[in-house]
Length: 114
Length: 114
Image 1 (tube, one colour):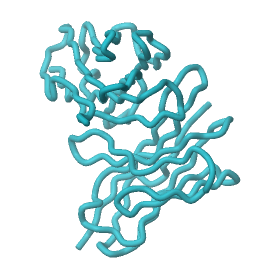
Image 2 (tube, helix red, strand yellow):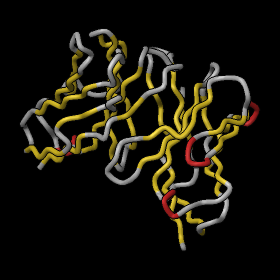
Image 3 (cartoon, chains in turn yellow, cyan):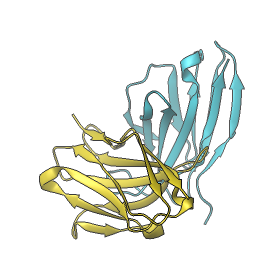
């Protein structure tokens, strides 16, 4: 069965520190992977996506993610966190199996301390 | 270009009532998907419509239904509301139907069932 696991429910980092959010997926075929960010009471904004090609993908707001097929991972990174990055982050895999749908992880809430 | 719009943004209903939520996709987008977001279950896929046809449906009871119009606007309906239907309902649109299509999310409709 297709699934996405985000092992960290919440993470706290200091402003200016680096960030890595973990994501593991289970999917039989070539995965289409995404990271979204959601601010309180808002919809989802796409940070970046991986479809194929270069396994290191760059996104908006200074985020990047690396696809590692051998580890079934798609971790999100940012070298220096800003207070405005505090939000909830969702990793997702899009699937065509049985029809198009997107499967989301449970999310990681990021807290940024001054 | 206008983004995905959802109306209403907030809704309060009582148990047993029914509700209709509306989603207007980005101009030119033909696929609309619906998701339910709750603190306990996270983001769950409800259904996807493409060219007025339901292409895929998630694991929700028949009280949840939807439709898509010729202009790609979509509505979802929940009948006989239960307390557990309280959630943020998100709509997403994409150009085509399939995992390689980027989805753009609306701000959501917050439904509270009393």
